[in-house]
Length: 201
Image 1 (cartoon, rainbow, N blue to C red):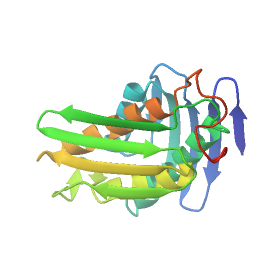
Image 2: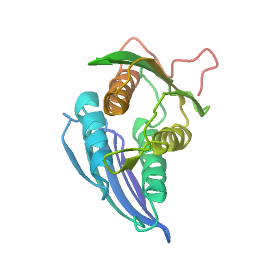
Image 3: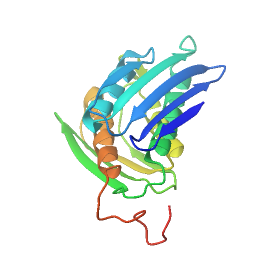
Image 4: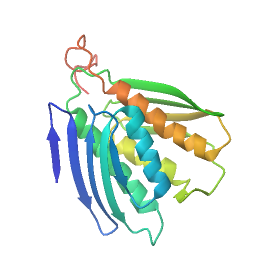
């Protein structure tokens, strides 16, 4: 079940499979309020950071097969979040389209750049050297952003410019992604239609 409110740029999506049951609501024009429960504490913390620093209102409730591992819960949440972003921005008329942020977090420095272009692609360069941070399997960070990029049909680049602490690297990435997405989805009154020489995205 999908629902979009054009004026407020809100998308609400539910997705149920044999592996996960997800309910997610995203308001691009929010104030950074979040209610997150995925069953994975560190992942919840990361989604809170994404919402707060992107100034999105985000509600996420996930029941996943965590008795297996975190894979299905994190990947499917990425798919649904990506779909919600795509629905909430609508036809992209009047938005900046591109966004980027270089974000420091202690010794870590993360670059995130994205284009809401309807051409999904992920370039990912994080050097994580621990199997887990809290209850999050670090290999799932890439899987999450891959799912978001393809669900949202965005071109997404994530690059670690510096850093050694895996917690700081991951948290900096989620915050940088939030800031870059906030920039890309902002309306600019000078933009007539979509920002493309082709006339469509």
